[in-house]
Image (cartoon, rainbow, N blue to C red):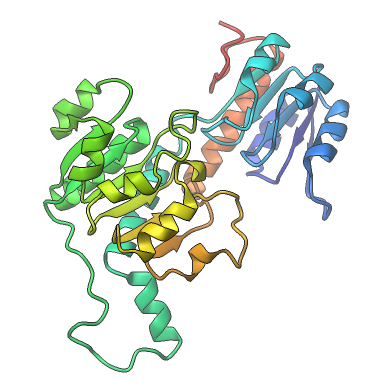
Length: 323
């Protein structure tokens, strides 16, 4: 079988697939693999290893209905029309569980950074704006015993909450579709409605899926309900926050600061006004960017491909075509 990987990933994936007798091509050309180009070149392959940035919509799948399996090199899969894929009997995979700690750690790093103005003050020092110690200079926030609101209490959200509880003895509240009894029992977390999460939290960290209910749920009305001292972290999906409203909220001091590892679009244009706000920190979607996490992700996508070819349940099984 012939497999296309749309961007270079850890070579363990190629080794696993080639050892099984398959042919692997990694797109590493200077020419950008656009939607139309990917749609065209995919006709020559039996399976794809795709990125979140690859649009695999109904039109793409209809034109490439010969594909046996597509696996995202990510936990998320909102870039793939899974309903159409299921109808066409194309197995869809992802990489669950392996980037939980890495992403939670990054969310924790963003929290520490924006609460103490680390990047802002370091940049000022580097650029010669640090003129001396100032009693009122670069004042940040203490994180101890604060209330942490988790929006989307899945594996990553719970791991992040655990870090905050252990480090700063935070009170944990969360908003989710269903109750998380183990989360409640282990960390004393309390399930609340979204409005209470907004009003009661000192810190809100977003860890939910992107869907019709969560798209732009953090808008200007949400920001008005938050504390003026609140910190917002997003390591989930950029579209969960209405970015123009976030910009307004920070400028109007409706919230204190925000740390974003995800934006809409990605990459965010270099002249985007969000970059100009010292109280908004943006990192380039590096939540899973540890050696260990990316290696394991590569192993799982390779396993997903092999399982799809053999019509076995995938390791990261999205549409559960083979049970």
